[in-house]
Image (cartoon, rainbow, N blue to C red):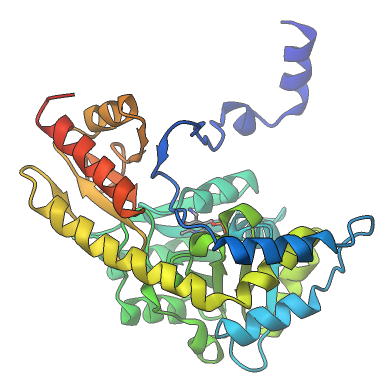
Length: 365
Ligand code: PMP
């Protein structure tokens, strides 16, 4: 063994050595439909104005760690109930990491539970924090298997349950009564996180139910709304619980430029909301077109992406790649085989995707 291999063997955790990191493909030159980004930029005049505000940013000092102005704006504009605060994160990825870090413990194994398929960072963050991850398969119709979830909660007594609402990668909304029953079942023993990353499209929320459930965390992000590049997530919960998580948050985790850009965006929510409406309409059109293709099944989505079952997902993805269209291959997903996930984009990019898919299905690539 070389000395670097010996060093790694002696220092890096074996499970980390085995881990395949979160892979983000290089998208230059591709139509990027794999990451649920908003394809529309802010109008140029707004970007110019943002540029002027960024020019005044104080970047020789650390950010103000309490982020008071931005937090107040988030609470006021994004429906956080009166009396509730938020914690901000470098994307909701960081908030997931903060929560699992706070719940992972040395004295006994702690568990994270989620329906599967789920957003991959739930299991990845849990494992990185040294927690067990238990995935409960959705039913074949992609609904929550409430009985199986309740049984798994009774068996594993998870510290955290993640429920994405709408779910990624399936795009559907779980039944809110089933979710409430799951949250209630965990009452004093576990924290239920409702991940509303796709709230700008679905508009459904548990945010107003925070007072009803002391063990509920509602988490959202500005990423899907058109601000993926600035990395800002937020979560709200009972103030006492939030205070515990806040101890785990790295100091200065939201940088000055992000704070300015986020405040600016929150002042122009009307523009972002209109973009989300456009994307919702485009999603429904794309879904209808996909549904008319032989051998293709498209699943109901309340988000800015569609999950689509095709005869051979590997082949479709390979053909798409050859045509410079990046989508997500879900071929190995639990519950359903041969699915792909495509982000809804501009009419032009949606057509490019559709044409490439038709060519792939027709074998004319
Ligand atoms: N939750 C879900 C359900 C997601 O799909 C994603 C992004 N794919 C995230 C959280 C992470 O979002 P962010 O960009 O805020 O880290």
